[in-house]
Image (tube, rainbow, N blue to C red; front, top):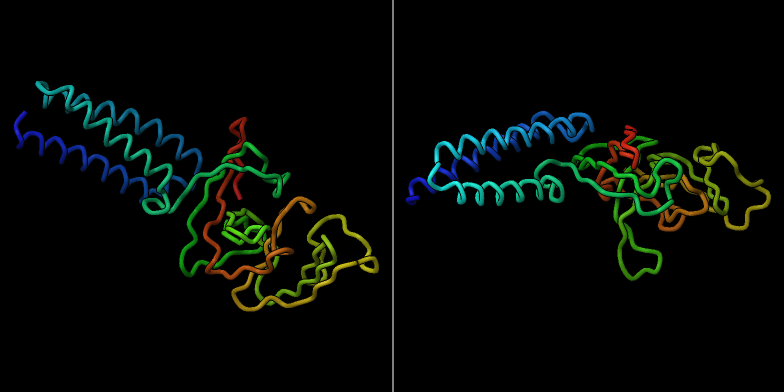
Length: 232
């Protein structure tokens, strides 16, 4: 195969993956598990048909065509799965703690959507951010629920938290028995994050409120080990 044909081969393959990427973004495919599942299957079929076309056009160099397709396919899938922040504004991750139990369970897979620069978050959203870890010598990524929003009044009684006098957790102790108490009002662009599992969550009770600009992602949905999908 001469240089011109090699250039044409690479150009066709690049255009194929650019088109796939643009369509992936335009249709906002990761926002729906069913769209994502359909796209994954369709992408395999489209790649096979495209491969057949290339084999016909560049028949003397089938091995080279195969190598080029494999390299580009692996690179595209790697970017789609691990570098989706840059290309698609989405990311995929797994649950590795019980801090959001029973909403999120170990073994669940989560789809994260990158929060827009000026995008607000709402009470009840499950978001992702990075905070200083409990030992204070590093950082940790956490997924928590937005419990308090700007101008809310927060009252902390040991492990229990009251938002505007309403308990975040279903069961709470008598206020007269509090050993540790905090009272404050959330300032503008400050959010109070809590885990659904009251006694097993490292959250705003420990590190305080989080600024909006430090919230990185919103969790769109989860996929359980049995393939059950739950949207948030």
